[in-house]
Amino acid sequence: MATYKKGFKKQNSEMLLLKTIVVIIVSVILIVAVAFVYDSVTKWKNYNNYETVADYADVFALKNASEQELDDYVIYVYSTTCESCATIKNDVLKLGNKFDDNTFFLLDTGAIEGESTDFLETVERTTIATPMLVVVNDGEFYELFVGSTAVLDTLTLIEEGNYTPFNE
View 1 (cartoon, rainbow, N blue to C red):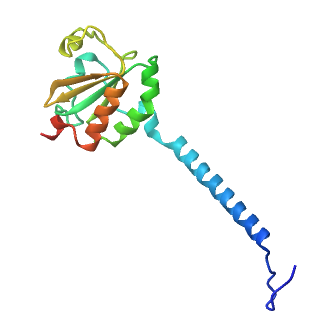
View 2 (spheres, helix red, strand yellow):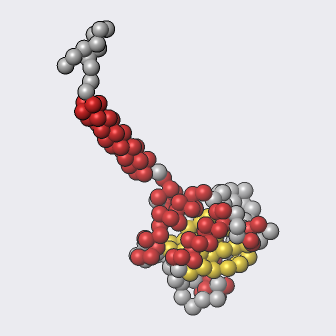
View 3 (cartoon, rainbow, N blue to C red):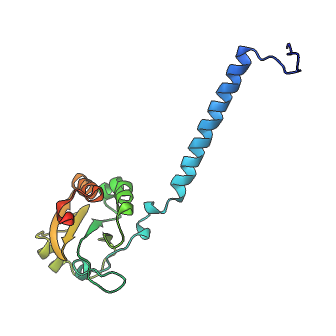
């Protein structure tokens, strides 16, 4: 290999191309590794990191830390055995993570206590379907959304600030 007057080695175009390719490959691997680490340490992907409703009787009477009743909130009703719930879990939790405290709650139908009779009468249903989103506005039952698409669309509207009942 030839050298310049100051002692630097001349590089041919093939060597320069090889170094460029190596730098690109190392950069891509580094970006993928950082994304993997970030994804594995994010806490929003676990149901346990969100406030839960423990009893059907509490659904329409949730309180904050100061024991004041909440006005506007949503409760995502799911089951750990529901395939649709598992499919939309990450999307629901990612949206729920963006909500203010005391706005987004979870209700696991398999882990809840109490009778669902009053709850079902209030939401005008005969059975509890999952996934389901219960909307409480001004402390009263407002609306119910059943199914993956309806739940995700409504959560997106709320997160974007375009859900009318929460904007009044």
